[in-house]
Length: 129
Image 1 (cartoon, rainbow, N blue to C red):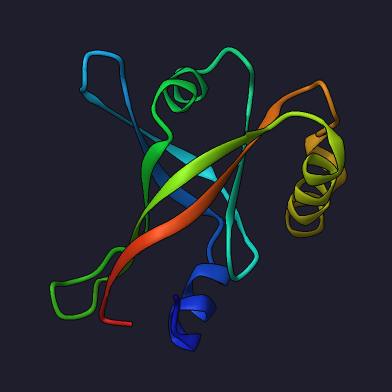
Image 2 (cartoon, helix red, strand yellow; image 1 turned 135 degrees about the horizontal axis):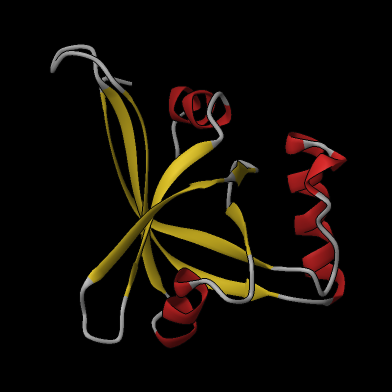
């Protein structure tokens, strides 16, 4: 789905804006750290967050990874996708390992400590990449 240059751009960053849909249909948009493995995006979150409550009700979400600049130099990728919540088991541990390998052990992630949102891209748009 992603070109080589888009993958390179996404792997060079670790912060995105994540938008989920609240029960009253208003977007909820927050900055979050992410890990990208070339296919999925992984975002860890506490069990008490609004974004987790939102994606449990509506699996559709969007994220934007961008760099500031002028209109001619600004770079970004916008992804729309479906979210799966991982909490335990082999898929959780595989996702956790991907996050830890990129961000390091300092985050203290562990099973039962937080959920991991695995975003499967469905559509994407990029510019200046």
